[in-house]
Image (cartoon, rainbow, N blue to C red):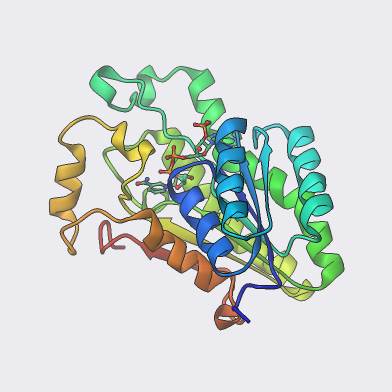
Amino acid sequence: MSTHSSRVVFVTGAGRGIGRAMADAHADAGAAVAYLDHDAALAEEAAAAATARGVKAVGLSADVSDYAAVEAAARAAEAALGPVQVLVNNAGISPKSGQDGRRAEAWEMDPAEWRRVIEVNLTGAFNCVRALSPGMKALGEGRIINIASVAGRTYCDIVGVHYAASKGALIGFTKHLAGELGPYGITVNAIAPGRIDTPMMRGTASGANEAVRLATPLRRLGRPEEVADTCLFLSSPASAFVTGQVIDVAGGWLLT
Ligand code: NAP
């Protein structure tokens, strides 16, 4: 029996990129997986591919910033797969609305762009915790894994101030929730990826990714599957006594 065979896992932003890799890794480890994405077609296609490999999976569409939609998706996941033990808060955005695919600087940023990033990257994670943690408390076990960023801890000249603020807040959110939920057998940890080769990263201004590669001690960008490996560790029995931690998957980039 595989390490994850009795797990039901709910991954947001699972249609592509890091979220897809984490959801697929859990499916391939034997878990039943709810693939949630903004984009219904992507979520359904990802779940159908997992189902075709013999895994129990469901594709769900919701905007994580919309609490009613998240609540409906959480109940749909439970109806299809059973009680959810693992929540991976991955959905996130990093707008580059400045000139030539660069970030907008704080003094020129549209306040609506600021609000949207906080609503998706931070409130989205709260919404999922609000909808799914009561079920974990009732089970007496659970794992919550928040996908933050090294940019949440230190200055990174690629991302905007909204993104850095949202990811820094996600780290505080992780530590606080570890305290609240620990007594119920629920661990809460974060992963801080460095530069990972995904559609989000490819939207960055030209030259930026090569500069990151050269500034990364391991001299390469990361792969979504490498973030998925750490996520699998955090949802497995091997990390049962690990909570409130942030694990960098960054090749040593922006070490603090
Ligand atoms: P990505 O390629 O853009 O994929 C993100 C996925 O999330 C997309 O399928 C997107 O769907 C979905 N999504 C966006 N907003 C959503 C919302 N409101 N509700 C539901 N789903 C939503 O991004 P990625 O690079 O895989 O990043 C995944 C996570 O890792 C993010 O939290 C990101 O901040 C973090 N991260 C990435 C890197 C990196 O270098 N790639 C580094 C550090 C941290 P739609 O586009 O259809 O909305």
